Image (cartoon, rainbow, N blue to C red; front, side, top):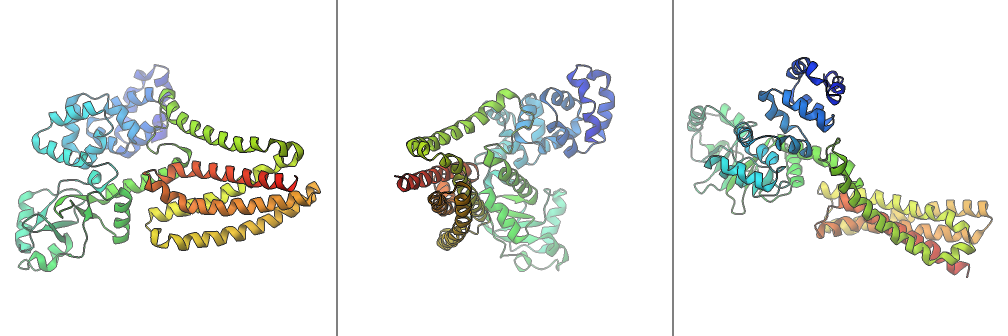
Length: 447
Protein backbone atom coordinates (compact mmCIF):
# COMPACT_ATOMS: atom_id res chain seq x y z
CA UNK A 1 0.00 0.00 0.00
CA UNK A 2 2.82 2.40 0.82
CA UNK A 3 4.46 1.74 -2.54
CA UNK A 4 1.25 2.53 -4.40
CA UNK A 5 1.13 6.02 -2.93
CA UNK A 6 4.87 6.49 -3.45
CA UNK A 7 4.42 5.93 -7.19
CA UNK A 8 2.34 9.10 -7.33
CA UNK A 9 4.87 11.29 -5.56
CA UNK A 10 6.57 12.20 -8.83
CA UNK A 11 3.49 14.31 -9.61
CA UNK A 12 3.87 16.08 -6.28
CA UNK A 13 7.45 17.12 -6.99
CA UNK A 14 6.48 18.28 -10.49
CA UNK A 15 3.58 20.35 -9.21
CA UNK A 16 0.82 18.21 -10.76
CA UNK A 17 -0.45 16.60 -7.57
CA UNK A 18 -4.01 18.08 -7.60
CA UNK A 19 -4.86 15.81 -10.54
CA UNK A 20 -4.34 12.70 -8.39
CA UNK A 21 -5.19 13.99 -4.92
CA UNK A 22 -8.60 12.28 -4.78
CA UNK A 23 -7.14 8.89 -5.63
CA UNK A 24 -4.32 9.31 -3.13
CA UNK A 25 -6.76 10.37 -0.41
CA UNK A 26 -8.70 7.15 -0.95
CA UNK A 27 -5.48 5.13 -0.66
CA UNK A 28 -4.54 6.95 2.54
CA UNK A 29 -7.94 6.21 4.07
CA UNK A 30 -7.33 2.50 3.53
CA UNK A 31 -3.94 2.57 5.26
CA UNK A 32 -3.20 2.04 8.94
CA UNK A 33 -1.64 4.94 10.91
CA UNK A 34 1.71 3.16 11.13
CA UNK A 35 1.74 2.70 7.33
CA UNK A 36 1.00 6.38 6.79
CA UNK A 37 3.83 7.25 9.18
CA UNK A 38 6.19 5.00 7.20
CA UNK A 39 5.10 6.70 4.00
CA UNK A 40 5.70 10.19 5.42
CA UNK A 41 9.18 9.23 6.59
CA UNK A 42 10.08 7.77 3.19
CA UNK A 43 9.41 10.88 1.10
CA UNK A 44 11.06 14.32 0.81
CA UNK A 45 9.71 17.27 2.87
CA UNK A 46 7.85 18.92 -0.05
CA UNK A 47 5.80 15.82 -0.83
CA UNK A 48 5.46 15.05 2.89
CA UNK A 49 3.55 18.25 3.59
CA UNK A 50 1.14 17.63 0.72
CA UNK A 51 0.46 14.06 1.85
CA UNK A 52 0.00 15.23 5.45
CA UNK A 53 -2.72 17.66 4.38
CA UNK A 54 -4.62 14.74 2.84
CA UNK A 55 -4.52 12.58 5.98
CA UNK A 56 -7.89 12.34 7.66
CA UNK A 57 -8.09 14.31 10.91
CA UNK A 58 -9.26 11.19 12.74
CA UNK A 59 -5.96 9.46 11.90
CA UNK A 60 -3.48 12.34 12.07
CA UNK A 61 -3.01 12.15 15.84
CA UNK A 62 -2.34 8.41 15.71
CA UNK A 63 0.08 8.89 12.83
CA UNK A 64 2.11 11.41 14.83
CA UNK A 65 2.81 8.78 17.48
CA UNK A 66 4.64 6.55 14.98
CA UNK A 67 6.86 9.27 13.49
CA UNK A 68 10.49 9.90 14.39
CA UNK A 69 11.16 13.08 16.32
CA UNK A 70 12.50 15.17 13.46
CA UNK A 71 9.55 14.36 11.20
CA UNK A 72 6.90 14.87 13.88
CA UNK A 73 8.51 18.20 14.85
CA UNK A 74 8.34 19.36 11.24
CA UNK A 75 4.62 18.58 11.03
CA UNK A 76 3.76 19.94 14.48
CA UNK A 77 5.28 23.30 13.64
CA UNK A 78 2.76 23.66 10.81
CA UNK A 79 -0.20 23.37 13.22
CA UNK A 80 -1.97 26.23 14.94
CA UNK A 81 -2.59 26.41 18.67
CA UNK A 82 -6.14 25.03 18.47
CA UNK A 83 -4.91 21.93 16.64
CA UNK A 84 -2.14 21.34 19.18
CA UNK A 85 -4.59 21.63 22.08
CA UNK A 86 -6.94 19.20 20.33
CA UNK A 87 -4.11 16.66 20.17
CA UNK A 88 -3.76 16.86 23.94
CA UNK A 89 -7.37 15.71 24.33
CA UNK A 90 -6.80 12.61 22.21
CA UNK A 91 -3.41 11.41 23.42
CA UNK A 92 -2.20 9.96 26.68
CA UNK A 93 -0.21 12.45 28.74
CA UNK A 94 3.13 10.73 28.16
CA UNK A 95 2.60 10.46 24.40
CA UNK A 96 1.62 14.12 24.12
CA UNK A 97 4.61 15.12 26.23
CA UNK A 98 6.90 13.24 23.81
CA UNK A 99 5.44 15.18 20.89
CA UNK A 100 5.48 18.49 22.70
CA UNK A 101 9.19 18.20 23.49
CA UNK A 102 9.94 18.45 19.77
CA UNK A 103 8.70 22.07 19.72
CA UNK A 104 10.54 25.25 20.75
CA UNK A 105 10.20 26.22 24.41
CA UNK A 106 8.07 29.26 23.57
CA UNK A 107 5.52 27.09 21.77
CA UNK A 108 5.51 24.54 24.60
CA UNK A 109 4.69 27.32 27.05
CA UNK A 110 1.89 28.60 24.83
CA UNK A 111 0.35 25.14 24.53
CA UNK A 112 0.53 24.62 28.31
CA UNK A 113 -1.16 27.97 28.92
CA UNK A 114 -3.95 27.02 26.51
CA UNK A 115 -4.77 23.77 28.35
CA UNK A 116 -7.15 23.51 31.28
CA UNK A 117 -5.57 23.35 34.71
CA UNK A 118 -5.85 19.58 35.27
CA UNK A 119 -4.34 18.71 31.88
CA UNK A 120 -1.62 21.30 32.34
CA UNK A 121 -0.61 19.98 35.75
CA UNK A 122 -0.42 16.39 34.48
CA UNK A 123 1.63 17.46 31.48
CA UNK A 124 3.99 19.61 33.54
CA UNK A 125 4.58 16.67 35.88
CA UNK A 126 5.87 14.59 32.95
CA UNK A 127 7.77 17.44 31.27
CA UNK A 128 9.62 18.19 34.51
CA UNK A 129 11.64 14.98 34.04
CA UNK A 130 14.15 14.18 31.26
CA UNK A 131 12.62 12.28 28.36
CA UNK A 132 14.89 9.25 28.89
CA UNK A 133 13.84 8.66 32.52
CA UNK A 134 10.89 6.88 34.11
CA UNK A 135 9.38 10.29 34.92
CA UNK A 136 9.56 11.30 31.27
CA UNK A 137 8.01 8.00 30.16
CA UNK A 138 5.21 7.78 32.71
CA UNK A 139 1.53 8.50 32.32
CA UNK A 140 -0.16 10.23 35.24
CA UNK A 141 -3.54 8.64 34.50
CA UNK A 142 -3.62 5.90 37.14
CA UNK A 143 -6.20 3.96 39.14
CA UNK A 144 -5.31 3.44 42.79
CA UNK A 145 -7.09 1.43 45.47
CA UNK A 146 -6.63 0.89 49.20
CA UNK A 147 -5.62 -2.47 50.75
CA UNK A 148 -8.61 -2.44 53.11
CA UNK A 149 -11.22 -2.29 50.34
CA UNK A 150 -12.99 -5.45 49.29
CA UNK A 151 -12.92 -6.78 45.76
CA UNK A 152 -16.63 -5.99 45.45
CA UNK A 153 -16.02 -2.31 46.34
CA UNK A 154 -13.24 -2.06 43.79
CA UNK A 155 -15.39 -3.62 41.07
CA UNK A 156 -18.26 -1.21 41.77
CA UNK A 157 -15.77 1.68 41.66
CA UNK A 158 -14.51 0.56 38.25
CA UNK A 159 -18.07 0.31 36.91
CA UNK A 160 -18.74 3.89 38.02
CA UNK A 161 -15.65 5.06 36.15
CA UNK A 162 -16.98 3.40 32.96
CA UNK A 163 -13.55 3.87 31.30
CA UNK A 164 -10.10 2.63 32.20
CA UNK A 165 -6.68 3.84 31.03
CA UNK A 166 -5.28 1.93 28.07
CA UNK A 167 -3.06 -1.10 28.75
CA UNK A 168 -4.41 -1.51 32.27
CA UNK A 169 -3.59 -5.00 33.48
CA UNK A 170 -3.40 -4.17 37.18
CA UNK A 171 -4.48 -1.52 39.66
CA UNK A 172 -2.00 0.24 41.91
CA UNK A 173 -2.46 -0.34 45.65
CA UNK A 174 -1.53 2.59 47.93
CA UNK A 175 -1.95 3.42 51.61
CA UNK A 176 -3.71 6.48 53.03
CA UNK A 177 -0.64 8.61 52.24
CA UNK A 178 -0.64 7.48 48.58
CA UNK A 179 2.56 5.51 49.17
CA UNK A 180 3.06 2.45 47.01
CA UNK A 181 2.07 -0.90 48.54
CA UNK A 182 1.68 -3.30 45.63
CA UNK A 183 -0.24 -4.18 42.45
CA UNK A 184 -3.68 -5.73 42.12
CA UNK A 185 -3.88 -7.80 38.88
CA UNK A 186 -7.26 -7.57 37.17
CA UNK A 187 -7.25 -11.36 36.77
CA UNK A 188 -7.04 -11.77 40.55
CA UNK A 189 -9.74 -9.15 41.06
CA UNK A 190 -12.17 -10.80 38.65
CA UNK A 191 -11.65 -14.38 39.84
CA UNK A 192 -11.57 -13.80 43.62
CA UNK A 193 -14.40 -13.89 46.13
CA UNK A 194 -16.00 -10.40 46.15
CA UNK A 195 -15.78 -10.28 49.97
CA UNK A 196 -11.99 -10.63 50.23
CA UNK A 197 -9.85 -7.57 50.88
CA UNK A 198 -7.44 -6.20 48.32
CA UNK A 199 -4.59 -6.92 50.75
CA UNK A 200 -5.29 -10.67 50.43
CA UNK A 201 -5.13 -10.84 46.63
CA UNK A 202 -2.68 -8.11 45.68
CA UNK A 203 0.91 -8.73 44.57
CA UNK A 204 3.03 -7.10 47.25
CA UNK A 205 6.27 -8.34 45.65
CA UNK A 206 5.80 -6.24 42.51
CA UNK A 207 8.32 -3.41 42.81
CA UNK A 208 7.67 0.17 41.80
CA UNK A 209 10.10 2.10 39.60
CA UNK A 210 11.91 5.18 40.86
CA UNK A 211 10.98 8.31 38.93
CA UNK A 212 14.59 9.11 38.01
CA UNK A 213 15.44 5.59 36.77
CA UNK A 214 16.90 5.62 33.26
CA UNK A 215 14.86 4.41 30.30
CA UNK A 216 17.34 1.55 29.85
CA UNK A 217 16.79 0.48 33.46
CA UNK A 218 13.03 0.60 32.99
CA UNK A 219 13.26 -1.58 29.87
CA UNK A 220 15.44 -4.10 31.72
CA UNK A 221 13.00 -4.30 34.65
CA UNK A 222 10.08 -4.92 32.28
CA UNK A 223 12.03 -7.62 30.46
CA UNK A 224 13.21 -9.36 33.63
CA UNK A 225 9.78 -9.36 35.30
CA UNK A 226 7.58 -9.76 32.20
CA UNK A 227 5.61 -6.65 33.09
CA UNK A 228 2.79 -5.01 31.18
CA UNK A 229 2.66 -1.98 33.46
CA UNK A 230 4.46 -0.71 36.54
CA UNK A 231 3.93 2.05 39.10
CA UNK A 232 6.28 5.03 39.23
CA UNK A 233 7.08 6.54 42.62
CA UNK A 234 8.95 9.62 43.80
CA UNK A 235 11.75 9.53 46.36
CA UNK A 236 9.18 9.40 49.19
CA UNK A 237 7.53 6.30 47.76
CA UNK A 238 4.41 8.19 46.67
CA UNK A 239 2.82 6.98 43.42
CA UNK A 240 2.96 9.69 40.75
CA UNK A 241 2.26 7.68 37.59
CA UNK A 242 2.69 4.43 35.72
CA UNK A 243 4.63 3.09 32.74
CA UNK A 244 3.12 0.70 30.21
CA UNK A 245 4.69 -1.82 27.86
CA UNK A 246 4.06 0.27 24.72
CA UNK A 247 6.43 2.94 26.06
CA UNK A 248 9.06 0.31 26.83
CA UNK A 249 8.85 -1.11 23.31
CA UNK A 250 9.58 2.39 21.99
CA UNK A 251 12.69 2.53 24.17
CA UNK A 252 13.89 -0.86 22.91
CA UNK A 253 13.43 0.22 19.28
CA UNK A 254 15.24 3.51 19.88
CA UNK A 255 18.16 1.74 21.56
CA UNK A 256 18.40 -0.71 18.66
CA UNK A 257 18.50 2.19 16.20
CA UNK A 258 21.09 3.98 18.33
CA UNK A 259 23.29 0.89 18.44
CA UNK A 260 23.49 1.00 14.65
CA UNK A 261 23.70 4.76 14.07
CA UNK A 262 25.51 6.14 17.13
CA UNK A 263 28.99 4.79 16.22
CA UNK A 264 28.75 6.84 13.03
CA UNK A 265 27.71 9.96 14.96
CA UNK A 266 24.15 9.85 13.61
CA UNK A 267 20.97 10.54 15.58
CA UNK A 268 18.48 7.68 15.75
CA UNK A 269 15.64 10.21 15.43
CA UNK A 270 17.15 11.98 12.43
CA UNK A 271 14.92 12.40 9.39
CA UNK A 272 16.19 10.29 6.47
CA UNK A 273 15.03 13.00 4.06
CA UNK A 274 16.12 16.00 6.13
CA UNK A 275 17.33 19.00 4.17
CA UNK A 276 21.03 19.46 3.41
CA UNK A 277 21.05 22.60 5.58
CA UNK A 278 19.94 20.71 8.71
CA UNK A 279 22.02 17.60 7.99
CA UNK A 280 25.28 19.46 7.33
CA UNK A 281 26.03 20.71 10.89
CA UNK A 282 25.24 17.34 12.49
CA UNK A 283 27.68 15.47 10.32
CA UNK A 284 30.25 18.27 10.22
CA UNK A 285 30.73 18.02 13.99
CA UNK A 286 31.76 14.38 13.82
CA UNK A 287 33.88 14.91 10.75
CA UNK A 288 35.68 17.66 12.66
CA UNK A 289 36.25 15.37 15.64
CA UNK A 290 37.57 12.69 13.32
CA UNK A 291 39.89 15.23 11.67
CA UNK A 292 41.39 16.12 15.04
CA UNK A 293 42.03 12.46 15.83
CA UNK A 294 43.60 11.99 12.39
CA UNK A 295 45.97 14.89 13.06
CA UNK A 296 47.03 13.21 16.32
CA UNK A 297 47.90 10.01 14.47
CA UNK A 298 49.69 12.01 11.76
CA UNK A 299 51.73 13.84 14.38
CA UNK A 300 53.03 10.52 15.72
CA UNK A 301 53.96 9.38 12.20
CA UNK A 302 55.67 12.69 11.50
CA UNK A 303 57.81 12.28 14.62
CA UNK A 304 59.36 9.16 13.03
CA UNK A 305 59.77 10.58 9.53
CA UNK A 306 63.48 9.76 9.47
CA UNK A 307 62.90 6.12 10.31
CA UNK A 308 60.24 5.77 7.59
CA UNK A 309 62.63 7.25 5.01
CA UNK A 310 65.26 4.74 6.04
CA UNK A 311 62.90 1.71 5.97
CA UNK A 312 60.19 2.39 3.39
CA UNK A 313 58.42 -0.90 4.18
CA UNK A 314 57.29 0.62 7.48
CA UNK A 315 54.83 2.86 5.61
CA UNK A 316 53.30 -0.21 3.99
CA UNK A 317 52.94 -2.14 7.25
CA UNK A 318 51.72 0.64 9.59
CA UNK A 319 48.01 0.21 8.73
CA UNK A 320 48.20 -3.46 9.73
CA UNK A 321 49.21 -2.65 13.30
CA UNK A 322 46.59 0.07 13.69
CA UNK A 323 43.83 -2.00 12.09
CA UNK A 324 44.41 -5.10 14.22
CA UNK A 325 44.39 -3.03 17.39
CA UNK A 326 41.26 -1.18 16.30
CA UNK A 327 39.34 -4.38 15.60
CA UNK A 328 40.43 -6.03 18.85
CA UNK A 329 39.48 -2.94 20.83
CA UNK A 330 36.11 -2.59 19.09
CA UNK A 331 35.24 -6.20 19.91
CA UNK A 332 35.89 -5.57 23.62
CA UNK A 333 34.22 -2.14 23.58
CA UNK A 334 31.04 -3.50 22.00
CA UNK A 335 30.89 -6.38 24.47
CA UNK A 336 31.31 -4.09 27.48
CA UNK A 337 28.76 -1.52 26.27
CA UNK A 338 26.24 -4.31 25.75
CA UNK A 339 27.05 -5.71 29.20
CA UNK A 340 26.50 -2.31 30.80
CA UNK A 341 23.18 -1.87 28.98
CA UNK A 342 21.98 -5.29 30.22
CA UNK A 343 23.22 -4.64 33.74
CA UNK A 344 25.80 -7.42 33.53
CA UNK A 345 28.90 -5.26 33.96
CA UNK A 346 29.51 -3.39 37.19
CA UNK A 347 32.46 -2.30 39.30
CA UNK A 348 32.41 -5.60 41.20
CA UNK A 349 33.07 -7.82 38.18
CA UNK A 350 35.06 -5.38 36.05
CA UNK A 351 38.40 -6.72 37.31
CA UNK A 352 37.49 -10.28 36.27
CA UNK A 353 36.39 -9.03 32.85
CA UNK A 354 39.60 -7.03 32.48
CA UNK A 355 41.66 -10.11 33.35
CA UNK A 356 39.76 -12.23 30.81
CA UNK A 357 40.21 -9.64 28.05
CA UNK A 358 43.93 -9.40 28.85
CA UNK A 359 44.34 -13.16 28.45
CA UNK A 360 42.36 -13.18 25.20
CA UNK A 361 44.41 -10.25 23.89
CA UNK A 362 47.67 -12.00 24.76
CA UNK A 363 46.62 -15.18 22.95
CA UNK A 364 45.32 -13.32 19.90
CA UNK A 365 48.32 -10.99 19.86
CA UNK A 366 50.80 -13.85 20.06
CA UNK A 367 49.02 -15.95 17.41
CA UNK A 368 48.71 -13.16 14.85
CA UNK A 369 52.13 -11.70 15.66
CA UNK A 370 53.80 -15.02 14.80
CA UNK A 371 51.76 -15.42 11.63
CA UNK A 372 52.23 -11.85 10.39
CA UNK A 373 55.85 -11.72 11.56
CA UNK A 374 56.84 -14.80 9.53
CA UNK A 375 54.89 -13.53 6.52
CA UNK A 376 56.60 -10.14 6.69
CA UNK A 377 60.03 -11.75 7.00
CA UNK A 378 59.33 -13.92 3.96
CA UNK A 379 57.91 -11.08 1.80
CA UNK A 380 60.49 -8.40 2.64
CA UNK A 381 63.41 -10.69 3.44
CA UNK A 382 63.97 -8.85 6.75
CA UNK A 383 63.66 -10.79 10.01
CA UNK A 384 64.10 -7.63 12.11
CA UNK A 385 61.11 -6.04 10.41
CA UNK A 386 59.00 -9.14 11.06
CA UNK A 387 59.95 -9.17 14.77
CA UNK A 388 59.24 -5.43 15.16
CA UNK A 389 55.84 -5.81 13.48
CA UNK A 390 54.91 -8.80 15.65
CA UNK A 391 55.88 -7.11 18.94
CA UNK A 392 54.07 -3.91 17.98
CA UNK A 393 50.95 -5.89 17.14
CA UNK A 394 51.02 -7.64 20.52
CA UNK A 395 51.41 -4.32 22.33
CA UNK A 396 48.56 -2.67 20.42
CA UNK A 397 46.10 -5.55 20.77
CA UNK A 398 46.70 -5.75 24.53
CA UNK A 399 46.38 -2.00 25.08
CA UNK A 400 43.27 -1.98 22.87
CA UNK A 401 41.70 -4.64 25.09
CA UNK A 402 42.39 -2.57 28.20
CA UNK A 403 41.00 0.56 26.54
CA UNK A 404 37.89 -1.22 25.27
CA UNK A 405 37.17 -2.58 28.76
CA UNK A 406 37.75 0.60 30.77
CA UNK A 407 36.60 3.28 28.32
CA UNK A 408 32.79 2.82 28.63
CA UNK A 409 32.87 3.23 32.40
CA UNK A 410 35.10 6.30 32.21
CA UNK A 411 32.86 7.93 29.62
CA UNK A 412 29.76 7.24 31.69
CA UNK A 413 31.41 8.83 34.71
CA UNK A 414 31.74 12.06 32.71
CA UNK A 415 28.17 11.85 31.44
CA UNK A 416 29.14 10.83 27.88
CA UNK A 417 27.31 8.07 26.02
CA UNK A 418 29.95 5.39 25.26
CA UNK A 419 27.93 4.15 22.28
CA UNK A 420 28.42 7.52 20.58
CA UNK A 421 31.92 8.58 21.64
CA UNK A 422 33.53 5.24 22.46
CA UNK A 423 34.37 4.23 18.90
CA UNK A 424 36.01 7.54 17.98
CA UNK A 425 38.14 7.67 21.12
CA UNK A 426 39.12 4.01 20.87
CA UNK A 427 40.15 4.34 17.23
CA UNK A 428 42.33 7.34 18.07
CA UNK A 429 43.92 5.47 20.97
CA UNK A 430 44.72 2.33 18.95
CA UNK A 431 46.04 4.33 15.99
CA UNK A 432 48.35 6.45 18.14
CA UNK A 433 49.49 3.49 20.24
CA UNK A 434 50.03 1.26 17.22
CA UNK A 435 52.00 3.82 15.24
CA UNK A 436 54.08 4.83 18.25
CA UNK A 437 54.90 1.23 19.21
CA UNK A 438 55.71 0.13 15.65
CA UNK A 439 57.74 3.15 14.61
CA UNK A 440 59.39 3.47 18.02
CA UNK A 441 60.55 -0.14 17.98
CA UNK A 442 61.70 0.26 14.38
CA UNK A 443 63.72 3.35 15.28
CA UNK A 444 65.43 1.44 18.07
CA UNK A 445 65.99 -1.70 15.95
CA UNK A 446 67.43 0.14 12.94
CA UNK A 447 69.44 2.74 14.87
